[in-house]
Image (cartoon, rainbow, N blue to C red; front, top):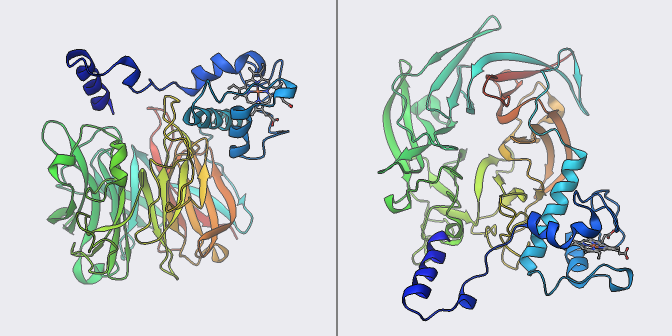
Length: 477
Ligand code: HEC
């Protein structure tokens, strides 16, 4: 984007063929537009003035986002709401809708950055009571959790360390894995997800995603496998890596989850801040890939016969998919991805389908400028759920234990910014019930069912002085 506009300016200045009118209009951000065009009547803080509040959740004319956009575009002339169809583009109107939604929800729920201390005693929820026990302390960004069949818990730190946690008589101790893989630690990049394959007992392979260091301080997502030999990372093999030309200094949107399903594995690969690449089938970015466990391409993948397409692609049009989960009974694949500002998504993944980023999105750019005027388009799947403002949706896993029988096969979803652990009941491709289990106890990095059936959750408490922790939710009799 930046490259293109400077190229235009270059041509305009030196070749003399383009005029200012040919240049793309500079994107205007929603907050500036609001101040310029709306604040006068609806109040600088959206709480109302001459005209009504846009935050009180009582709407006379607008039931949904499309209605709000229509009111802004067409106005309600008889009562003094002007039409903005000339002053604002459809994309800018869409960004204003996102701003109204975002501000409205913040109004209800302002606590984003603080975390309350972990509660003690019996906690109740809709179906089960439980206790929360802190089992491991002093971590940094514990990106993923994985249990080995012998009950040991593997923890990846984004900064590159791997810990093994062992429990003896209820007391947990941790040790470091020697010789961890080399990673490019930058912003969201580093060591990401561990996954233990179903045939681990036979093969000893462990699967790991990371940001791989390229030349000149660049990186990209990569999938490797290796073995633990005497707590030392060994036998490393690369299973999936991106072409060097896609390595970038952008430290964002790696995706990076790996899950198993039968003979296959699924890998989520973020668009890496190269927005258009999620729609480009010749590149790995912004995709979910399906491979055999040894890295070979399954011959029945949806794009194996498409000229120019990467044969590993299973679905595309994803932004930053940090969560992937396979239903333990039906094998259906679910995915979470971070939207930009607004537009976080929970998706039901079908092979070959396009999930729309950045052609359709329910969010806008971080600076308030629009990404797209549209939220839906034929041939592109809608999310099953979406969140504006963003909750920063990240890990996703089915609960598979017996300690909480009524939670069995429920989908658990974690959120970073809004510090939530949610329980979702899914039927086919629908979510039929939602419950927030934890709120404001820290950024939920990962959660997993333990061998004891308890739910283990890694929580990052905001603030550099606060170490991240692993907690265990155990049933309360
Ligand atoms: C000149 C004053 C004025 C300006 C400027 C103005 N509005 Fe309005 N707006 C109104 C009035 C008055 C109404 C109520 C219309 C009614 O109830 O019939 C309204 C209604 C609305 C509604 C519908 C609310 C509902 O309850 O359904 C929305 C949404 C809205 N305005 C958004 C905006 C946005 C966004 C802007 C800036 C782009 C804007 N307005 C600028 C006066 C204004």
